Amino acid sequence: MPLTDAERDELKKAIGERREVLVAEIRTDLARSRSDSFGAIAGEAPDSGDQALASLVADTDNAETSRDVRELRELDAALVKITDGSYGVCMDCGDDIPVARLRAYPGAVRCIACQSMYERTHSHPPEPKL
Ligand SMILES: [Zn+2]
Image (cartoon, rainbow, N blue to C red; front, side, top):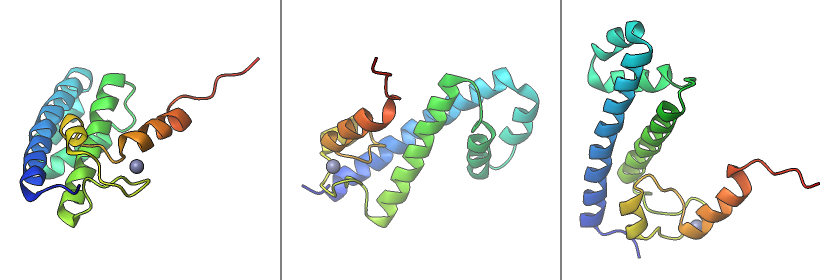
Protein backbone atom coordinates (compact mmCIF):
# COMPACT_ATOMS: atom_id res chain seq x y z
CA MET A 1 0.00 0.00 0.00
CA PRO A 2 1.53 3.36 -0.96
CA LEU A 3 2.13 5.94 1.73
CA THR A 4 -0.65 8.38 2.47
CA ASP A 5 0.14 12.10 2.43
CA ALA A 6 -0.09 12.14 6.23
CA GLU A 7 2.36 9.26 6.57
CA ARG A 8 4.76 10.90 4.15
CA ASP A 9 4.60 14.18 6.11
CA GLU A 10 5.14 12.31 9.37
CA LEU A 11 8.22 10.51 7.98
CA LYS A 12 9.58 13.70 6.48
CA LYS A 13 9.37 15.34 9.89
CA ALA A 14 11.02 12.33 11.55
CA ILE A 15 13.83 12.44 8.98
CA GLY A 16 14.37 16.15 9.61
CA GLU A 17 14.60 15.58 13.36
CA ARG A 18 16.95 12.61 12.95
CA ARG A 19 19.16 14.66 10.61
CA GLU A 20 19.55 17.36 13.23
CA VAL A 21 20.65 14.79 15.80
CA LEU A 22 23.14 13.28 13.36
CA VAL A 23 24.58 16.63 12.30
CA ALA A 24 25.03 17.57 15.96
CA GLU A 25 26.76 14.25 16.66
CA ILE A 26 29.05 14.58 13.65
CA ARG A 27 29.93 18.14 14.63
CA THR A 28 30.75 17.03 18.17
CA ASP A 29 32.94 14.20 16.87
CA LEU A 30 34.70 16.54 14.49
CA ALA A 31 35.19 19.18 17.14
CA ARG A 32 36.89 16.55 19.22
CA SER A 33 39.13 15.17 16.50
CA ARG A 34 39.81 18.16 14.24
CA SER A 35 39.10 21.30 16.14
CA ASP A 36 40.95 23.60 13.71
CA SER A 37 39.26 22.89 10.39
CA PHE A 38 35.96 22.30 12.11
CA GLY A 39 35.63 25.82 13.48
CA ALA A 40 35.82 27.38 10.04
CA ILE A 41 33.16 25.10 8.59
CA ALA A 42 30.73 25.36 11.48
CA GLY A 43 30.71 29.14 11.15
CA GLU A 44 29.38 29.10 7.59
CA ALA A 45 25.78 28.91 6.45
CA PRO A 46 24.15 25.80 8.00
CA ASP A 47 22.96 24.26 4.72
CA SER A 48 26.22 24.37 2.80
CA GLY A 49 27.94 23.63 6.10
CA ASP A 50 26.18 20.27 6.35
CA GLN A 51 27.40 19.34 2.90
CA ALA A 52 30.96 20.41 3.66
CA LEU A 53 30.72 18.53 6.91
CA ALA A 54 29.81 15.33 5.12
CA SER A 55 32.64 15.63 2.63
CA LEU A 56 35.12 16.58 5.32
CA VAL A 57 34.49 13.37 7.21
CA ALA A 58 34.05 11.20 4.13
CA ASP A 59 37.42 9.61 4.73
CA THR A 60 37.39 9.73 8.49
CA ASP A 61 38.81 6.75 10.29
CA ASN A 62 36.36 7.18 13.14
CA ALA A 63 33.89 4.32 12.69
CA GLU A 64 31.14 5.98 14.66
CA THR A 65 31.39 9.20 12.66
CA SER A 66 31.42 7.26 9.39
CA ARG A 67 28.22 5.53 10.43
CA ASP A 68 26.57 8.84 11.28
CA VAL A 69 27.68 10.34 7.96
CA ARG A 70 26.37 7.35 6.04
CA GLU A 71 23.02 7.58 7.78
CA LEU A 72 22.92 11.32 7.12
CA ARG A 73 23.43 10.67 3.41
CA GLU A 74 20.69 8.03 3.42
CA LEU A 75 18.34 10.53 5.01
CA ASP A 76 19.30 13.21 2.48
CA ALA A 77 18.56 10.72 -0.29
CA ALA A 78 15.23 9.92 1.36
CA LEU A 79 14.29 13.61 1.41
CA VAL A 80 15.05 13.85 -2.31
CA LYS A 81 12.82 10.84 -2.92
CA ILE A 82 10.02 12.39 -0.87
CA THR A 83 10.28 15.46 -3.08
CA ASP A 84 10.27 13.54 -6.36
CA GLY A 85 7.58 11.09 -5.20
CA SER A 86 9.63 7.89 -5.25
CA TYR A 87 9.97 7.57 -1.47
CA GLY A 88 8.80 4.34 0.15
CA VAL A 89 9.30 2.21 -2.97
CA CYS A 90 11.81 -0.66 -2.89
CA MET A 91 14.70 0.14 -5.23
CA ASP A 92 15.15 -3.54 -6.09
CA CYS A 93 11.67 -4.99 -6.60
CA GLY A 94 9.57 -1.82 -6.87
CA ASP A 95 7.12 -2.88 -4.16
CA ASP A 96 5.94 -0.45 -1.50
CA ILE A 97 8.05 -0.51 1.65
CA PRO A 98 5.75 -1.01 4.67
CA VAL A 99 5.23 2.19 6.64
CA ALA A 100 6.20 0.38 9.86
CA ARG A 101 9.63 -0.28 8.38
CA LEU A 102 10.00 3.34 7.27
CA ARG A 103 9.04 4.54 10.74
CA ALA A 104 11.74 2.35 12.26
CA TYR A 105 14.29 3.19 9.58
CA PRO A 106 13.29 6.23 7.51
CA GLY A 107 16.34 5.89 5.25
CA ALA A 108 15.26 2.44 4.06
CA VAL A 109 15.51 2.03 0.29
CA ARG A 110 14.52 -1.64 0.10
CA CYS A 111 11.70 -3.80 1.39
CA ILE A 112 12.66 -6.28 4.09
CA ALA A 113 12.98 -9.23 1.70
CA CYS A 114 15.28 -7.36 -0.68
CA GLN A 115 17.29 -5.85 2.17
CA SER A 116 18.04 -9.22 3.73
CA MET A 117 18.98 -10.55 0.31
CA TYR A 118 21.24 -7.55 -0.22
CA GLU A 119 22.88 -7.98 3.19
CA ARG A 120 23.49 -11.65 2.52
CA THR A 121 25.24 -10.87 -0.73
CA HIS A 122 26.96 -7.52 0.01
CA SER A 123 27.50 -6.76 3.67
CA HIS A 124 30.02 -9.37 4.67
CA PRO A 125 33.00 -10.42 2.61
CA PRO A 126 32.73 -14.08 1.81
CA GLU A 127 34.42 -16.29 4.35
CA PRO A 128 37.10 -18.57 3.00
CA LYS A 129 35.64 -22.04 2.84
CA LEU A 130 38.38 -24.45 3.73
ZN1 LIG B 1 11.98 -5.29 -2.57
